[in-house]
Length: 367
Image 1 (cartoon, helix red, strand yellow):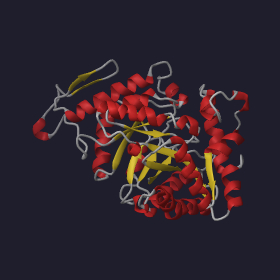
Image 2 (cartoon, rainbow, N blue to C red; image 1 turned 30 degrees about the vertical axis):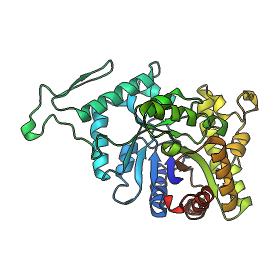
Image 3 (cartoon, rainbow, N blue to C red; image 1 turned 120 degrees about the horizontal axis):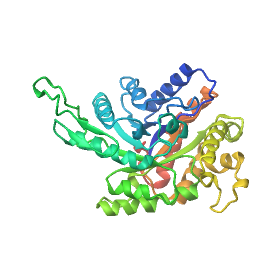
Image 4 (cartoon, rainbow, N blue to C red; image 1 turned 120 degrees about the vertical axis):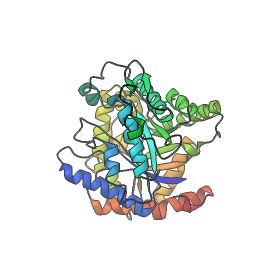
């Protein structure tokens, strides 16, 4: 099992924006130093708690300082941009990173973004698919482009001057394009099957209850079989809220308290998703009444916290419940106590994952 990093991120809205950006940079630089293999970053336009407004721009700020880690977007909200813009921006990032890039795409799940961008009342999934199809066609095509769908046109027929390079979109370093991933929260997700059938891989979000997470692997394997790809869970990435400390009581106080940074995270996410009609994601069992779903329950059932030995046991138990997956994405939270959060990331990389992989009969060097 490999170890990666994932952040939306989620911070107190009143926190100094500069500090938020510095903290997230520092976390990914630390992940790079510790040997985390990937770092995925979200983006939102209209959220002071989740204020990275361009994950591609944020990645560009890290490229020359984090020299080993592979960067990923989770996700570029494709309905928000013209596909030609995304094609050009992603091609640049892929070249800047020397191919250390994974292209995470999504329809955009934040309703205030959809409202701001006039996408509240459209099928954002359909628009996302129309966008990625046009992006792939631009990369695979030859200028002058002449592409059109119900949302966009993309052409340089009137302005192409190949001799001086005008009218030509840059292409990614990785051929035919960077790996594509999609993030999923929906139980029994048909989108995961469709994505795998197209050659893409899934990330399961950290705030989904384990019994729902377990429904994702069969849907992924179904798509792999349709595509004639190797039918195993190695391409499946699963994000999880994890906190490791040298003291059990300190770990529980920091990560399980409603007043701690993990409590803030789940309060924020639950408010958004329950308000968006998705309370089932937080149910401890499928038919749990919604009035019984509480913040305290989510912290108790959805956060892994403790000392190294305890966290190892909890990760192994989690894997036993949901099935085989290839990469565990440690989820970044607000650094209320930076020393504790740095220590948690360090223990996760140097102590927890080697023991997890030893227990799985794999090589600890896979982190």
